[in-house]
Length: 127
Image 1 (cartoon, helix red, strand yellow):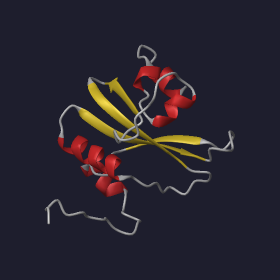
Image 2 (tube, helix red, strand yellow; image 1 turned 120 degrees about the vertical axis):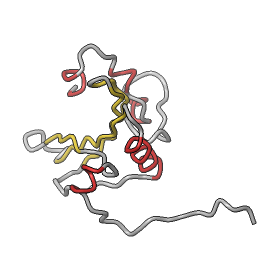
Image 3 (tube, helix red, strand yellow; image 1 turned 90 degrees about the vertical axis):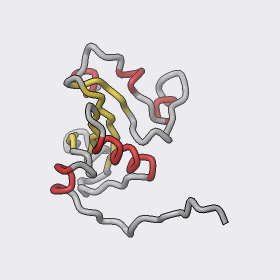
Image 4 (cartoon, one colour; image 1 turned 180 degrees about the horizontal axis):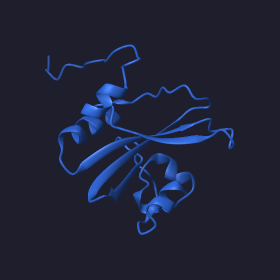
């Protein structure tokens, strides 16, 4: 609903690409894209990844497809990758929506730190 208010001229149902869309809309979504919504905003493609929390932990996790998309957008002109962070999702009075920068962008690097356990690498070399 927030996106519909922000971008009333766009088809937000069509912009919703994640697997969750199939719970409310016809057609299957695709969770391997690395984002939940793709919209045009300020003459750029914005790729929005929605993260939520029961409380307000100010933490979220990015999977491998999300990291790849964030990295690609950080180096590609005309694209933005943003985190839509929704806190307190089970309490409508305390719920808050924040648009956060791409954690892999220059701006994001000053606002976030890696709070996880590291990165797993797989060899591309055939043995």
